[in-house]
Image (cartoon, rainbow, N blue to C red; front, side, top):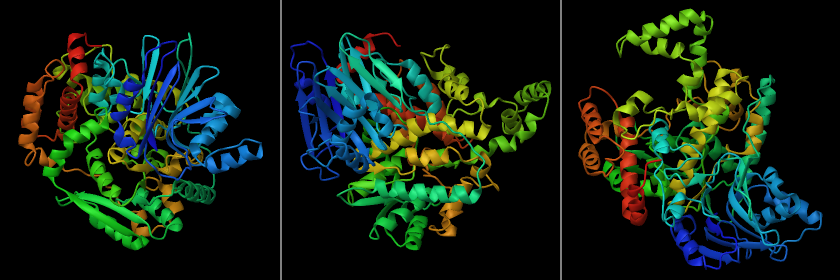
Length: 626
């Protein structure tokens, strides 16, 4: 586990090591145990390492085949033992027992197709000293990050965008990214807040050759192909693949713990992990406010599963004090309130272990969100003539807000492509026009989801909603949250549900077995009945509740008001609008806490850029908004 940085600089005599070292220092939290560098006349590579497995001199950058290939790699390959054995049987030799060297062996054998054989989470680059080519890839689902930028003939790359912001002398603030952030509460791939910096989209690789443009290609698409199958057959397949995934995700020479919320997803992971480690430690956090803590449920679940549980409470004061550092560690603005408790959860976990398991991805793969039942509740509208739906939609517009039935009419008469853009929809375009000073009429939130709706035209609406979340919410929110919050504490997080073998099984489950009998994740719950207590399996989903609704009225009202008043965001945001939202919320007339949180997160993000990137902030203010 590490963070990687580097630069391809064909035929330049300059020593790039000081610059790459500076990039590496900005992500020291990703690998505090070791650092390393490699340079020749065309490339400079750097890395930070967090020691997870004793890899016998497998430090990075690592070379292979008489130093022909060099790699920097962030992640874990869970099937590397099996791949290594296959390669050895074919005559390949290895100097270490590391998964890093196995990637190089597989690259020598398969070239760009190496990614199709890897099972795990990864972002890596491989430099071929003979061909003078760079190959880089990001894992199938986007568990690990990969950022890049091109400056003249140079290609820079890094695990986090802050490494690239720190060395770019000129950068353009992306108003398009900001506009999409205000709807999604995260910046959708491949955008970042800096126009020149891009994220490599999950399931893609890059290839750079001297004198040729950067090649970017997709190698994996998480497509759903529901197949009618007997329930008992699916149940057995799900059990089998989850056992296998958890076993492989627990490969480590250091202590492995697990997050535990008391909900079904983390409970499944803990129950399976206990099979391979009967001394498993679990970690939980909660808030002091009644109804906003899962600690008691987590302790109860831990007792029922026979594992240890460590927990702590988060106060609003600690929450506010840690928020600026949290925003910096998140790299790009991410306004999911649930990310903050996970930030504290990672801190607590790091006191106990270097590796932790988590339940991210179960909802997106197995149909866990209540809103996925919406197509069933709105099915009556599909039977109406188009003209009637059109009339009902016009009628819904004149019904006053808050009147019972208005929302149902609006949702029922709105096409799914407009209605559902993912698990969070913060501001619509009309609202953004009111407070965004650089609002662009040519940018619309549906532009993000349109390609995925186009790809999924021939599948049922429930599966289409999952497909949208797989390609937006899971990547941009949950997995970004998981990576950044844990890496900030130098903790490696592993997500056994987000696994290509698990997805192979999940992708063929019919929607009526995912959402059935008014139950979400029906077939997953059935599969878990043999190893998770029934009281846990059918417990109501709580998520990671955060009491910002109450805090922004009371304990954090002054804190929020001060952020708005002092934020240097006047070129982008109408602060009077933000203040009016705060007052509206404090009055109790309307809950706009999520909208406020999205604005506050961006304002603090700008503040942190000012404090830690002063040279680039000056450049941003001098240039046109992109």
